[in-house]
Length: 115
Length: 110
Image 1 (cartoon, each protein chain N blue to C red):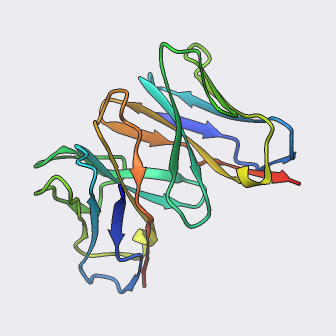
Image 2: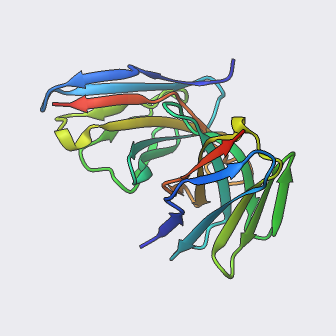
Image 3: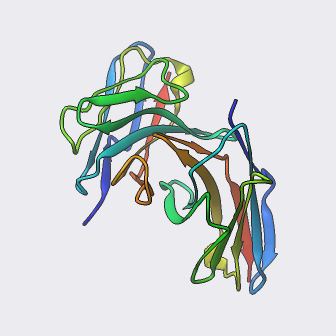
C-alpha cells in the first residue's frame, strides 16, 4: 500500500531532551516536507527536501533540523525541544516538487507535547 | 508577506444543498492552487488541483474555480452529504514551497 508513515504517533517529552520523528514514504517520491499544525494557524511548513541531500527552510524552521540521506526517509530532529514546539506534526511527500504531480500525500501525524 | 484567508467560521448546511467555501490570498502568484480535506486527528487528503491558467476544474460532486485577478478560489460541493463534514484546506503551490490556509470546517446536517 502506498503510504507515508510517521513514528512515533504520540510523544510526551521534557524541555531540552533531543528527539527525532521519523518519516518514510514508499512511493519513490522526490519531494518531502514537514509541517506543524496549530489551532487557528493551519499547516505551516518547517522544512522541505527536493531530493536526496537537498533540503531548504520553510516558513518556521527555527528549532528544527532535517536530513535526507535516502530518498524514502526524511527525519525531523528537535535538538532541544521547548514548550512552544508542542504541536501536531505532519510529514508529506509528492512525486515532484513542482509540476502537475505536486499533490502531497500526508502521513498520519505525530502529536508532540513538550513539558 | 504571503497570506491565505479561509473563512474561519464553520459552515453549516442542509444535506442536498451546495456548499461553497472561499479561499483568498494576497502577495502571491501561485502556479497551482490545491484543495485538501482533513478529518479530525488525520492528515489532509488531496482533492483537487487547479493551475493558474485554468478557470474551473471538476471532479464528481466537486468543483473548483480559480480567479487570479481577484486572487480567489471557490470550492463547491454539490448535493452535499453528512459524510462531507470535515475541514477543507486550500493551499498555494509555486516553486518548492506550499502555503496552507487555516481551513474551513463544514458541517452537513441530515
